[in-house]
Length: 122
Image (cartoon, rainbow, N blue to C red; front, side, top):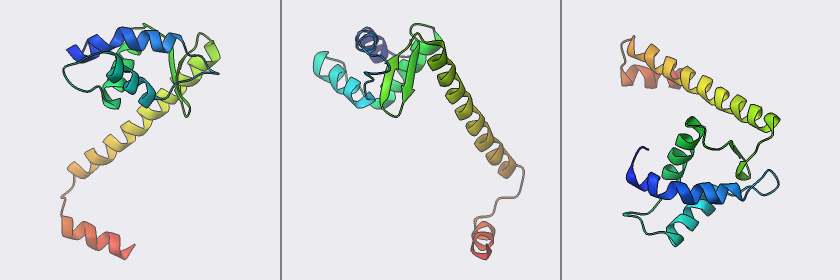
């Protein structure tokens, strides 16, 4: 696991998520609040910690965790899992495009004043 706080919170997150399903998702902030109210950690658990912990749980195949607008839930439905995989792939593609745009800028002479002038012309 990436760090101690994530390892300490993971068993509680697993239990919380196992009580969810597609009809009873839970918002990330609710999980964070539960963790902070139920267990004593060396510092406050955050949404960033939750995302990192859920990412770890997914990449180590611990639970089929699905995320949507209404929160996180566990689903053993192959269609839900496939839709989550597609959502992740879409984000990967978007991040790759952003990376390529930045790499393109690195390969050109970057000048702030020229960029401002170009933006003002458009």
